Image 1: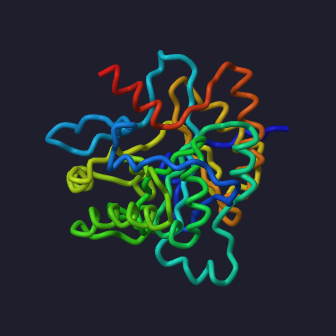
Image 2: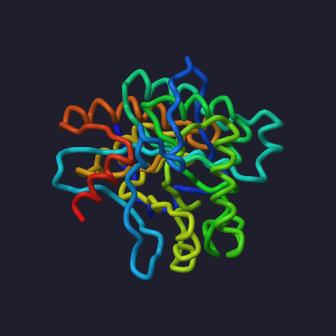
Length: 280
């Protein structure tokens, strides 16, 4: 029986302890990075800068372009969690990635550079699979504002470098086409952060549906929260780690068929951003 849970604020589903996903499988054909487009590939869609040139913020796609929904998974291993990984804590969820593949569900993984450094083979495997796209979740998973759910804070003069360092880590791991999308750690940002990151040229991606999977053990409750919240064009925030979001894989197995019964089509964030940009 699915248990109803109280809706939580979007940002509180994210915390410093949350971590990531992935497991190597058969290699996939690589594609050029969007930062260096060739004649055969174009830059992924982004939104135009906001007022005063601020980094644009995307929360959901158009509500009138059909029933599309994007499942996103935060791979937020923090810069100081290396000792925990060395001690045997699992910051991945191979079964979740395998389930998404088996269900043929496209997804966007917002990955920290620190996680890519810890699991380069898994980062490369996800990044080379056309079913997925990797986007930037900072290098350190430190907050870009003060008082962000207990996360350490990146200083203003280090924000741009932290984002760029993540892209460097992706390239080092062999990810061929990390997307020009950025999700703020903890979902916390302010005008100064948007101004600081404007030089990076990314679109900030938030969400309109919180899955509630962070630290959850009741997969029925997670599934119910998502199913109740999804609307056409929704972006769902989830996590993929065996240690901090153990209910997610089972919840996905319930969410996907139910949304498909309702006529929803799963897409990556890039498709929703492209649809939103065309409507501007």
